[in-house]
Amino acid sequence: MRIMFIADITGRPGRWIVSQLLWGFKRKHEIDFVIANVENAAGGYGVTREISQKLFTYGVDVQTSGNHIWDRKESHDLLDSEEYLLRPANYPPGVPGRGSVIRKSEKGIPVGVLNIQGRVYMKEIDCPFRVAEREIGRLRQEAAIIFVDFHAEATSEKQAMGYYLDGRASALIGTHTHVQTADERIYPKGLAYLTDAGMTGPHDSVLWVRPQDALRRFLTGLPHRFQMAEGDVRMSGVVVDIDESTGKATHIERYKLSYDGSVTVRDYFGLPPREVNEDEPRQVQRDEV
Image (cartoon, rainbow, N blue to C red; front, side, top):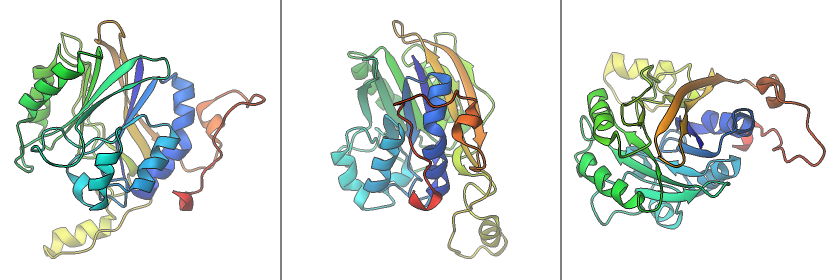
C-alpha cells in the first residue's frame, strides 16, 4: 500500500496545483490512497463545502484539518455531513464532526485515518496522547493501516507522539507550521514519521502571506489584513509505503514539486502519450479553483 499525503493546501494557488499535478503524481508513483490537509484551503482560513468537494474530485480520499477548520461557520455543518472530512479528534465532546475514519482504497484495503491536534503553544483542548491511544484502538479493529495527521506547533510534542505511537500506528505526519522538515524516518516498531510535511501553495511568501503584509505586521505591531501570495507555487508532502498485512511502514519519502503550467502534466512527469479512451482530467485554469 502506497499512501500519499498532501501538506496543508493553502488558498487558490494550493488548490490549483493539486488540480494540475495530483492525477499525474498518482499515476507516475502508483499511489493507492491520498490524504490531504485542507484547513487553509479557503483563502488560508478553513474550507468551504464547494472547495472540499472539488478536492475530492481531484483525487483526494480523506481530508484532514486543524485549528483553522473553525474559521468559517459553514464548516460546522460540513463536518457533520461529510464523512471523509476530519477535524482533530481531541476537541471536547459535543463539537461538530469526527476525528477519525476508515475508508477503503480502490483495491478494497481499509485505511484508518486519525486527525489530532497539539496543545503546546496552541489552544488547550483534550490530551492528544490519550485520545490517539483510544482512537487507534478502535480503528485497529477494522484496519491494519493507521495514518495520523498530528497538527501541532512544537517539534518536541510531535517527536514525543512519534515514540508514543510507534508500534500502534503506521505513520505519523506533522502539519501546521507550513515549513517542511528533513527528519523523515521509520521508528523501530514500524512507524513512518515526519515532523512537518510543509505547505501546498505559494512558497514566495511568509507561510502563504504576502511578504510585505507580514513585514508590516512585524515592523509596526499593528493589525494588518493578510493577503494570499501567488509566487512559486509548490505541492509538498510525503509518500509512505506500508505493509498491508502488518500495518508497518517500509519506506517514507518527502516531495516538493514546483509547477507553473508551462508544460503539460504528462511531460512534467514523463508519462507516455495518452491512450485511446484513457480517463485524464482536463487542465484546470487558476480562476476555476
